[in-house]
Length: 446
Image (cartoon, rainbow, N blue to C red):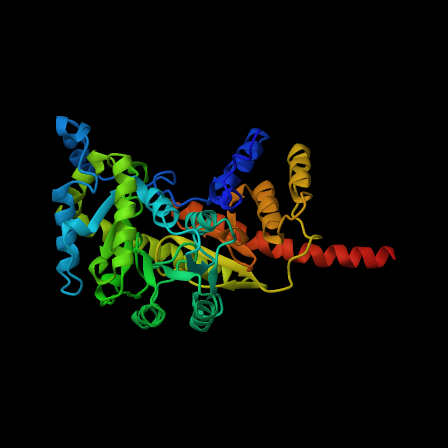
């Protein structure tokens, strides 16, 4: 090309959660029956939407007004409904003007990071959800800045690491929290949220809190919405319906903005986000119209509780199986519907493998693992997929130095779910021991 037309941050736009699908599809065509445990889509895993919810959407689809534009910020009635939900808790008080709708949180995330000054950085957790880390890194044209989540402490944030990172990197202007967390399934207690707010207050930072899984908490754990704790700190809460209802195909999410009036720079930044949305005119209308009707429906609380109880049961099945596997660090999932498992340091190497019966699949894997820079956990993921058909995501793709994998808890059939995790546990053990066998065989040859 006459000029370099590639954005400076293009190299940071990586989404392994979907990239692994291309590999799985190739193996499928070669005869491997795959079990997709890579992406958080409850519908794809067989979640059935109740008839009363479908009727709400169907009735709205029969109304002409569902097909038109809405206000740029979103439908006023829906924004008022959501503001009332927040205000009912008696802490932060917001108005409908503090809420902006987007075409899913992916859209919101791109704008929240993309409209920051190039020099301003938002420090996020490690591991972190790829859409956040990719968007933050892409806007700056550099690697994302992160603070550590500790697998030896329930995947809670390492607050000393966060504080030191903020203290010695003056470019950091904001902090990201995901609570409940994706990819780890951790749920943060109130004390941790307060400590992070205190750090933001001390260093004059703003806070982003992705709370899309806020109502999917179980195993006796509890947390607080950031609006209950925020005080006067400028902050953004990210919310949506893709996981909770669940309706991922709606592409409908929103942000709640707190304390924009407390800081003129933050207020101008929020206005730029709104202006950017205005250029697009608005977000999807029909899902917004459905939100108040669904969330206020008398059957909704029981429906949500039933889903929580299923995730709780499955989280314990998965935890009980994997915690017995030597070489793994395993934390029980207490929120959302993901589980992140890491290998103990030094156990992975490039000599480990799993048996692959199909010669064409084996050749495909050989090509994948011999690409320069392939991480040890990605190597494991490729072998796992080829040998068992189970598709997970390497934890290294979530912007972390840990090595392991993320798996979902979304399989609806309990027998199939149990089978998947039994197979996974056995495969991990076989994979780790395969390196030892190869070393022993090599020693015998010598």
